[in-house]
Length: 309
Image 1: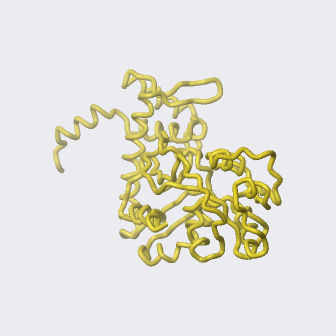
Image 2: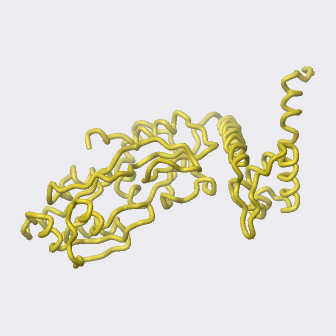
């Protein structure tokens, strides 16, 4: 039997309870003592005792206990990020060893529009460069808290600053009007922003992520038209683009999303007017998740074609 080393003794002294850390991680990730207890198969009282034990051992509060919710303190966030990352690393190695070293499933979270226009059409390329990769797509809002979801990579549009993961730039974005070649053939092309404002516009509801609608686009382009009269309004951006493809009018085109349709000639730009938005697309890795070679490969695939676009 190997003797217990001084380092091992030190770990036991500094980390008095691995059980407490496991239960703390579940509470922090789920923002609930009750949900953590259900996940771990123990009582809520047992989870509370373990977290209280950690707080007493450290001499700091890990959670703000509010009336109907809990929130990590600054010290709690610092501990959570380290614990979550360490547990993910252990779990990842364990999974690979227990499955004979095979690559595990990778979960990619995007909005429906990003998945529809940017991810799905390019899946054959990903299968070519990563034939063993098992990809699972999940649709989320850009603002969904990654700590509450089993996500390996998320794509978000914004300023790149989020508290639940580490972000890196995918690409910037610009927005301009698009229509189908058939619509352009059947209708006179607007010669000014004022004429464009009176054309058959297809609108889609603005989202909480900051995607602009026609009113905001005209304002950014330098025109404040009277109340717009839409030929069609959609709640989903994907529907607005499909309507434009089928010749129903002019929609706002987000360049990075529509590169494939523009290159294929299914959509065309109707004017040189364009708005470069301040925010951009970022890839976000949730805290506690390892960046593996497969993860890097997917990120580069997501970024692929950005320069040429």
